[in-house]
Image 1 (cartoon, rainbow, N blue to C red):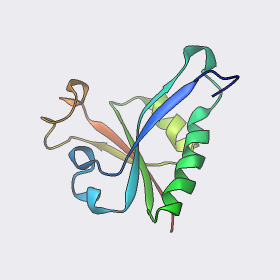
Image 2: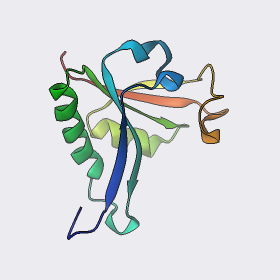
Image 3: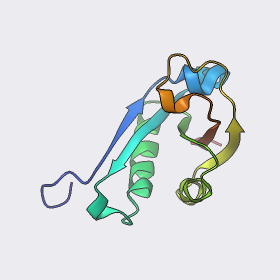
Image 4: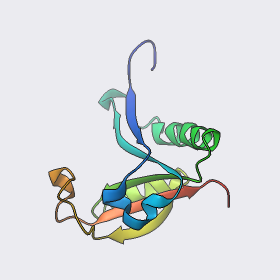
Length: 117
């Protein structure tokens, strides 16, 4: 919040089997649905979210902070890697039937931060 106004929101999940498949067994939190007020873009809220997520994940005994995006969005890949994520690559998901339609027929870019190397 800035001056009492919500400027950025996100969601944390503790499981994401449809996207992370066999890696879902790892102790991780998953960041989803980052949305920033259009008047506040460029303030690098992703880095703020990442710092919060790393501290929160460590406090509850998790080993990873993860997120995904879709397609070959070079700018977004760079943005997430600049925020500290390791880009794992682009993957075709095995079963998207339980995911929202924008996940269908689109490769997923997977990112993670390992907290305890």
